[in-house]
Length: 163
Ligand SMILES: Cc1cc2nc3c(=O)[nH]c(=O)nc-3n(C[C@H](O)[C@H](O)[C@H](O)COP(=O)(O)O)c2cc1C
Image 1 (cartoon, rainbow, N blue to C red):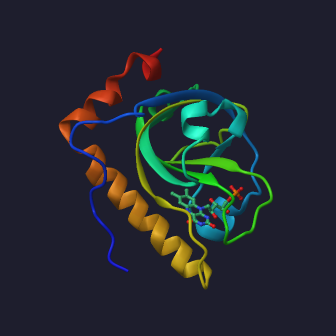
Image 2: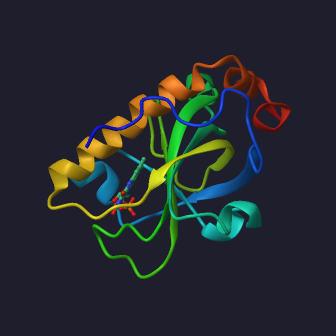
């Protein structure tokens, strides 16, 4: 399926931006091992109601993990999956943030701050792992291109992230 390379309006629209803060918890641990795409899981309880009530699927924006190591504490692009992961048939809704940076250490227990700026797609089931990985790789590319616009770049310096 051909997918749009840039999503969302050039100027942000309601209900975005949506900010949240939470500590990183353990997921099922498949992100790094099976997919080669690590995710920082946060409790869905920290997700603001406006986002809770939106479609399950993939969102994009900026995120920061508060770390001892300065290079790992910067604001990076992120895409996040909010939902039930139909490929794995999870019974509870999870919020998993893929941050586009190679971290030195894992970030369990650390504080994550994120600002969500738009919606990419609804969550899907796939015939195999390769198709899931390929779609996430496309999400990463779409995130980078969508964030490149001026209105979206400005949120990288949002006070909320830098506090
Ligand atoms: C950007 C992104 C998009 C994703 N899209 C889907 C999806 O469409 N369907 C799905 O079943 N899982 C999707 N996932 C979730 C992966 O299945 C999930 O990260 C994996 O199960 C690892 O979960 P774990 O950290 O709890 O082990 C997505 C994950 C990310 C980071």
